[in-house]
Image 1 (cartoon, helix red, strand yellow):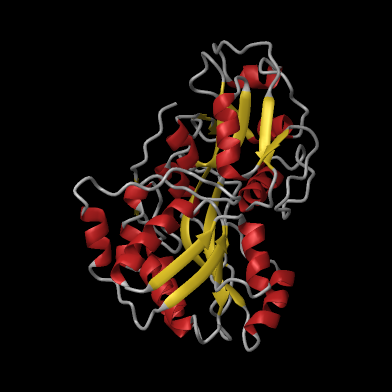
Image 2 (cartoon, rainbow, N blue to C red; image 1 turned 90 degrees about the vertical axis):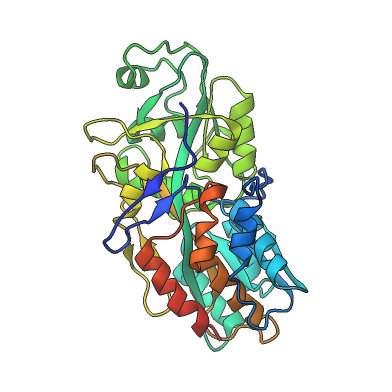
Amino acid sequence: MKLSRKNGLRASAIGALVVSGALVLSACGSDNNTATPDKKDGSSTSAATSNIACEGAKGQLLAAGSSAQKNAMDLWVKNFQAACSGVEINYQAIGSGGGITKFNQGQVAFAGSDSALKDEEVAESQKICKTGKGVNLPMVGGPIAIGYKLEGVDNLVLDAPTIAKIFDNKITKWNDEAITKLNPGAKLPDSTIQAFHRSDESGTTQNLGKYLSTAAAADWKHDPKSKSWPAQGGQAANGSSGVATAVKDAEGSIGYFELSYATANKISTVSINTGAAAPVAATSENASKAIAAAKVKGTGSDLALSLDYATKAEGAYPIVLVTYEIACDKGNKAETLPTLKAFLNYTVSEEGQKVLTDAGYAPLPAEIAAKVRTIVPTLS
């Protein structure tokens, strides 16, 4: 299955996306994916840095978390540091769980996470934020691709119950009746399925679990809130890049990761039978149709979103996630606050969001981006 890294995303209602570019997200782990390319003439970087406001940014800013946004962060950091002399932004892609832990221990100025803070994590953040609390600020969204390697099968179709049974070690052969029914005419081998999952705490794992718990409730009985892999069996790999590499290297394998990892590694991805007229491929445009229905569930400065994992809308890809930057609304460290605000002001700005398309990411929904832009300057 050939995937395009550049697709248009359009919408006008709340949560509607304005996008051109393949979506990524999410997810987490200590990944080392390929670097994000600039345009050959260098215009991507020069255009991106021309309007960056440094606004008192200085010194070093530490951050950690989601690996899904690693390539976006690499590009943002490169552009911001080029515009703001003497500033160093250090982002460690150690996974959503690891990033939140570091944030709540006061080790980083902000964390990246592919799932919003839990109530107990918000409560824990008040010890660090002191006069405030941690809030979720969305930055990018995208599809979680189900990638596979199966010789002679280029357009595999699965549905939620079948995916649940594969990752729960209840379907173990590629020519299982359930898979055969979904793929008439495909030459499915009588070979063992090698299912790979994340070994680290991951927002990608959590979002996949939410999808399976919603769309295949009878077959996925595990905790949908868990960032750790909850099922028995299968093989573990660290980070999205680790799972993608494992799938790329092993015949008969299947795994889950953000779309960019499938694209970068030329891994075929599953189309999902959602109950719509036709199976839905993992593309940015298809994911945007699902994300367009997102609703803000957070209050005040918190912009946590509620996603519709059970969508059956035509052409809507249901396995999606949103990556957040998590920072204190109040009580940030005085020495890093100017740099934190300047950097996040840039990442959510029109310039910061535009550079995502060449990196294989999706800009924020227009209305959500506007809300984030009003909140970042109020961080204190």
